[in-house]
Length: 396
Image (cartoon, rainbow, N blue to C red; front, side, top):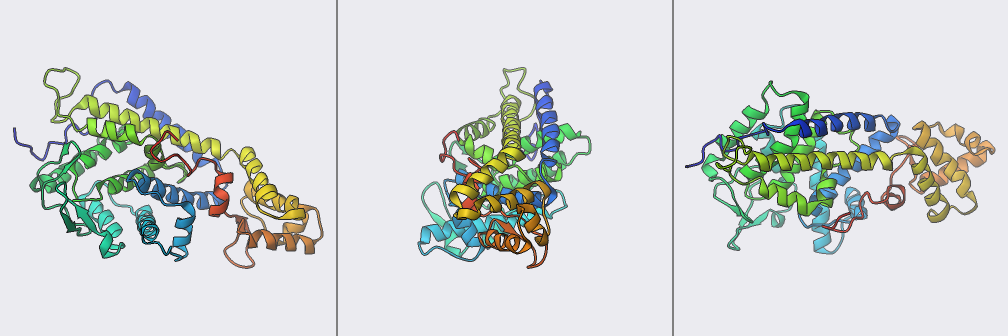
């Protein structure tokens, strides 16, 4: 039977939903708790760090690993001389720029126009030599940013639907997932389900994986389950990359007519249910991971270790840590308080404060405004162990 625009059905599992509902409820509860974990001043910078995580791990899933310090350097327009490393930095900048745009997007992420804009913004920021795609036969062609594919494709074992159906499939995708009948719990489950259905449609010649993850990140933010911007789905998918790809591929299966629990649509409901359960468990795992990492007393101990062992403050290490601890617990403090905080004269307080700011561990918006904790790349491995340095494609 030829495919039609309804070929993505079912858009959500319809049977045996209790376990998925329980997982979705846990996501809502745990994300709300994470949102209250840190002071607002620190949360803002942690949310920016989370964007780095989205970028780093989404690229890692594609087999492209960029060092965190190289991302920081790229943001300062300091590009590597080596072409391969420079290309990875450009990928990172493009990804971060799209994330910042998506963070302000208030329309429906389910619209085809949103997908096209994500794709256009990402690829239009890359140099021409990086906007090249290779067919399964090895033929290279120029990739047009934001344009739906105009040919049929095969990705691994997945034969994507005919390109002529893509506009209709995206229209049906939008119509069904935007339904006002979906409860908040079902909308959380739909984050997982729509991730697969988008990947199955495969709207673009290349870049569908990145767009799918950017799309899911946007849904998570709009649903208010991002914990104040403090956790990354892409990190969890990268840590469990093999299972992610296996279940994503498994959900491409057509419905089994011989199985009563496989739904009534074109695609396998049972396989979609398995994929949704996996993604929801990944969400919970990543929320729990960040919840542990942001436990203030433990974080303060790691900051103390960095200050006294790695930062090179010498005899002033104890005083430097007192300033950092104050910023961690209070969010920010006035420069004139430095002496009181370290239990010394105002002059010494300002001197130590200046050294800590110069080291990039405290920062402020202006030379005279209050200071808050900074999160430089050099300190991340100690402040937040395992946030970035996982074994590529391993188990974490």
